[in-house]
Length: 253
Image (cartoon, rainbow, N blue to C red):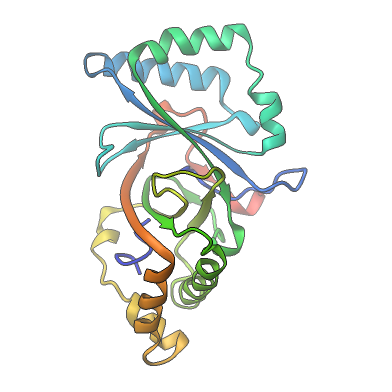
């Protein structure tokens, strides 16, 4: 459902198991550079991340938003980490805070949005090593008290793609905090070349091949009943601004 459902941060958004078995968490900060200070903003972000966020639970990846209302903004994504680890990583030194304030925040607009996303391994597919490059973001607004019904439909979607397109790598994440922005769930596809976006959408056909004739129309009706809307964006991984590399080594994790 590369156009209908999948076209899907964090984030590298990879579900990496934490030592304490807590679910992987990504803290995403949406930032806007001052128009006349973009070069200084990028230089400050790159230097800060490579000095303070190059590994472990403090590693940071940076993404440039390439479509939608947030085009031109940057997503500063800390993780994978856990809530327990944040008790330590959020206790930053005075030197760290001063560097952030002087070299990053000073070159950005005051507006900022921070969200926390928990990985959902049961609705993800990380089965081979790959290199981060492009991310397709598909974000959904789930209706109140419809979480169970939504998960049941997600099970069916997962089954379709695991059966028909298991070589593709994707991740699913839930917003840890309630909100009125329609940002409750995100499905992320990782892809290398833009030609992927032009591939034929076979999801309706695949769905009926897996779940039976006529099942897709029922799926659409049920899907509409549990969601209030969706939003799609394209992100580009900026390794030059990140503390981490773009290498996702699933086999070693």
